[in-house]
Image (cartoon, rainbow, N blue to C red; front, side, top):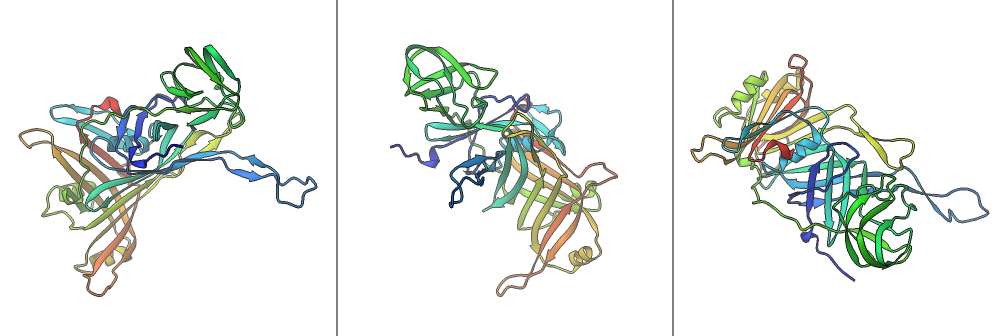
Length: 398
């Protein structure tokens, strides 16, 4: 029996060219926590069959693939999280001055993800961000990304025995799925009968995979696994820090951005988080056990912050339903040696209003404003929120 320490796992990501076309993810992202799972939605078979017990079988409903990823928001890997959640514009810049990646509200790209469990791996494909939450924990910017996906592969079973030398294909059982090989691609390494083989083909019907002639002996029902890759991490980047983040308020975006440009004009806050929801519908279709498409529903966003109470101004704005533009600028390390260019994350909220304001009194503590702001659509600007990420990663990675 093998046991595997979670710390030895990895997360690999890569955008897909099409929603249902998986790829081998090759960008390795340092992972804090992961909880993506397949919900098979089994239910008891309640048909009357002369029993006085609840059921003698479980039946499958439409399944879903969903869960959370938690990672630190360093300037390079944050681009993948934004790319799963929002529409990316054209990248500008170069390696010398840094690359600028703009994102706006719209359809994020579908991703292939891979999470290792010891020497085995789970491949998730057609993944998009349903919810993206950015927050600070002990000064470090972290993100929780709630994923919904079209499919997953980790393990299956043999439908046809392998009898020795000259084996060139594996036929997978359809007990779980009529297309059990979905998620596998040419170049993947699977283990069957204790032998590791590299795939040279995946049949269009999703049941059979091929490889070079190999000697394998295995029985019907034996397990077939996807083998983990050997991760290759580039030099680890530090996350953005709360201590290097400025927040500006203003009557419009321009005023808010100007206020966020200097410590003297920024809003002093000591806790900050923001959240964006796509409210994706994982819609099934005929001929598919799982979701066949992820449809956007009404999008929404929120901004939460705490700052020390100074006067009743925020209460007045809350009661009178005043609107405020907000800009957040997080600065990372310098890109140029002359210190003129840095890694940056700029989030612009074009129109927000307070939906909740608390000014709690706690013994021994200063009074603070705990604000929750709804991110609203600005009709005059025709947008609600935009992102700009400046880093050292070329645009092709996203």
